[in-house]
Length: 266
Ligand SMILES: [Zn+2]
Ligand SMILES: [Zn+2]
Image (cartoon, rainbow, N blue to C red; front, side):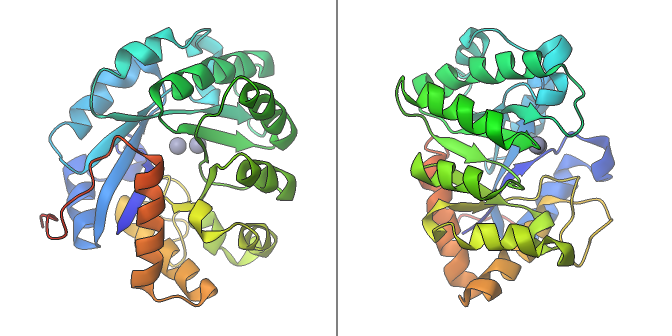
């Protein structure tokens, strides 16, 4: 089963309506889409996008870029929003020291407030981390001591130490279009060390379109290119790779219903 575990259907840069994005994704064989809400005050907007579709779900959290004015200090608002069955993950949250759009302390405080929510809800903690491997590892390890929670590093671009730490904490790493770029061989070698049962795929649409669409707006249908790239690198058939990644997705996103074999609507 092919899934896009992370995209932003509400983002203007995608250039097509959510309806069209979902239609094209289904035609490309994508059976589940998780669209991400990056500020809690965007919840109703994202929910309105996901609600009409049986195969579209939401991650809900505060993106590190938004942590300055919209960050949270406690898990409570996330626990309340999770009463909605469309919410299947906590995040994206995390640390972005590359863009540094929000003060680092605010990013860390908001990130840490998401962790108890993910643990209590038994939902994946969807983590965005860029140029912040060390602090990400430290925060995850510290909170891990209070009890396990499900870790997902979306659009993984980190180093070996972060990959190793996530695997050790039984977390998941998601392959984005970046991993198909010619220049990304060092990143691919880190990802080669990750067992197949710890991998997911995503688009992060509208950003980071995979080869051969690099530079164009990304959309969920293009997750098929990233999956095909990795199937070939691993010497697996596309069908076998989809099956492995799909099984991982449903192990991690426990709230997403597993579809019957012929349920895909075109
Ligand atoms: Zn992100
Ligand atoms: Zn994102």
